[in-house]
Length: 354
Image (cartoon, rainbow, N blue to C red):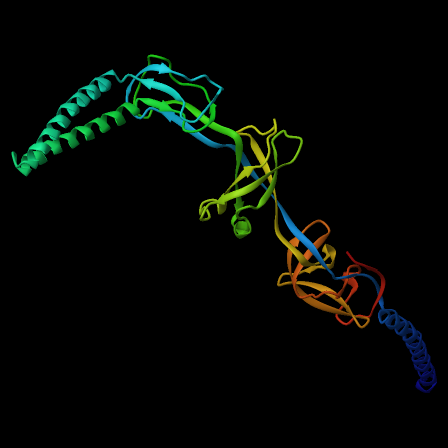
């Protein structure tokens, strides 16, 4: 019985070996075909790097202000006896706007002027007497001192009278008044305001990263809230330090035009073109591969892929600035990035430039 089974087992063993060999022979061509497809070049689009102009558009809020604005207040207390304030009208520089009661000061001034006349005559007589040694030098000096003291008192009284006269500091438009004729005002009470609106100022602030890019004579464009056109202003000054609370730099610009839309106090949106670089290197945004540690692009070099680390700058919807890692003339791959590995063979089907 055992002798009879041996040929059967041997035949089965030979059959299994032959079947396994056939399967291996069939798998070899398939594997070889797969390796052939992987080794073929990847078809991609590319972009040739060139120099171009780029800037970052930043919008910041601001306000339109009068070129000058002064609160007209009383320097001394007193009753208003004369008022030349017509609300909304233009006054010239030096125009008398408010007059306070000053009759007591006027009477004191007249008294001092009379005393001065008498003392001046006394001083003249003493000068002649001194020439003939009729009086001592000390007596003459005392009479002369009396004259000088009276002159100083008269000047002090005139200054006090001038403080009862409130005049326009410059040519401007008068605002609404807060007092009436006959009212008593105390020092510091606001009577009205005068605004110089022939020119306007634009007040705004920029983030500290752009502080060094904003300076005198810098041109800015803006549009007021509800406005239909762009207006322009020129920077006249910046604050000398960055605000530590807001991390912004305050800027003032003078508006270069007159327009019905431009009203003091209105909200404005300022459009700034910052970080301008006329020799920037730009690549399409999709060409940059971000990672945790860095950013990379794939260069086409001698029909192969070369991964290169880059440093980026200003970005918009289509392009991104390359600060470091590329040079003019480099060819950057823009499509099929996920299928490319280092040193992969590439075939460029389309090349674009700016």
